[in-house]
Image 1 (cartoon, rainbow, N blue to C red):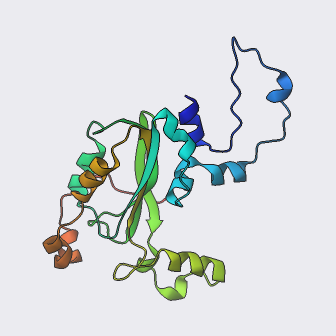
Image 2 (image 1 turned 30 degrees about the vertical axis):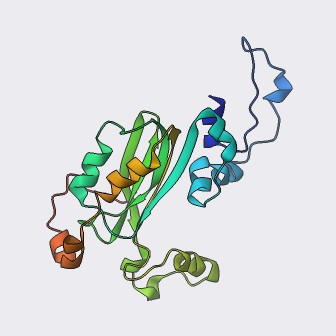
Length: 204
């Protein structure tokens, strides 16, 4: 449990108690909680940034980020998400995915324990005319950091945190969901005809 908690919130103070006995000043009026800081300290976010947390390894907790620069075949990725987890115990996963059948849009994946959901995340900047991009330098720099031709910021970026996860096995299964070379080269005319079992997306 300690390892799981450290992987989910790397900066939280963990206090062991017995029979609910704990000094109240440890949990009430501490002024320690900051929503903004908690968002930035999320284990999945630190993993996505490459800030690996090694102390969790003693508990068998590990994490990895999957990144790919070609779209998923929607049917294959749907089946991946709905299978029994192939290895270890998946505790938390989150990120963005790109379906070939919906080439302009990013999908969002969010899973914690036995609860998981996916849906509409927004449009990729690649699909938006540059005259509609934000004009401040910070936003433009963020867009450029994730840019790689020929698909710009369109990509898969998924973080997995769990116990005894086999990153190579999961990566191989996700790679098998990507379009193959002939499908990729066929372009969007073919992509949009691929079977897509995901429900229609509605912007939040």
